[in-house]
Image 1 (cartoon, rainbow, N blue to C red):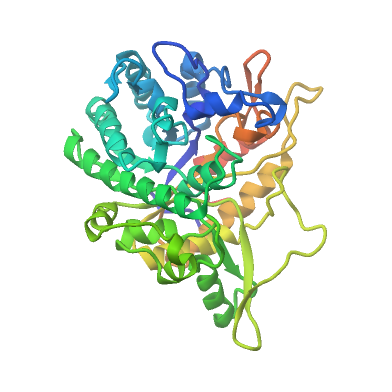
Image 2: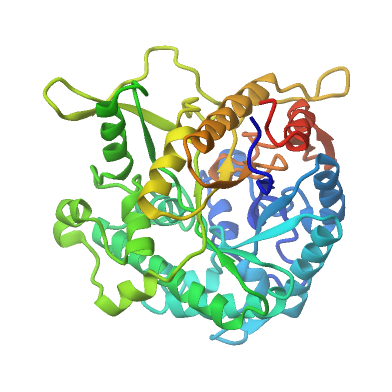
Length: 454
């Protein structure tokens, strides 16, 4: 069995992780430029100053995508490359920065690759962080203005849009845990209020895309999929327990689905989250919730892992612990392909929109072998099992429209620096040489047969 005939096979990357050129053509500093230069914040003090030098090598990278047979490429646009706040507090358009993305889009289309544009993948302008960042009630308006500047320029060629990537990470890890930029450890009430501003920014961004798009826009979303799956897939009780586990707000942290998804699709926060957070819950109005819940065309989600859940004899759901020695990636994430069967199913059933897996992949211990190639059998095994599970979701009746492997290139992995390699293409950071891995050639065959032989 293959996937549907119009299924889109893609790969993904993000601006700060690959572009480099941090001070070229009018780009201003982002929170990640600042954070990565703070002592001890990133592995070996690594920054994205050069990264994969994609800003100068994008044609070479698109050629690799074309040779792979890629049908779609998900990239993000760097806010501080597009708008300048140095001379104008409201932001002035930096035409040189926008020109880069215009050239990239043209190159993708010339190679028959559909561009999927993410407007925010964590690199907020430092000038706006200095004014409060997502903690500021003005941030939704800032984001709407930025959206308009991008959409006016690119929407004659770009159809697919995502305002945000993974608010759980840039809000939770950036403002609560301090592990990511801008590195704050704020009280939970302030974190949730900032999260509300980010969700409101999403809604205003959708409105801005609809208002300024030059061709009909297809708009989605790309949060973290915090997936639970049934310990026994043949047990209706375990399936219901896993559905509960996927959407329940159980702890005072960012790692859940419904707090970040229900407002976008239903216009309300989940009741269990409001009860758990109590006085820490954000202040909001009915009008704001209506703005957040702008109609979307598809549901995008990033899924890397899940947790097994079962129903106890007492009738309560419980997470099943992994046994000692359970397989993990080098990020220490458990290998759980079941997440790509059950996550899309649960989200499709709840939100009733076509599903795109906007990120999935693994970090591996890859190196250049003596024969001049990069052999990554673990990644091939990982992808085969996860894509096979996604095929099972499709066989179960889930409306799955596309899959984006993370990532096309090895790149800057945030606080992990250059230690972790997620790419289908190996990058020698010293020389910027690109070497397709064995998994690249394997994925090429998967695309060619539309997943029939996974």
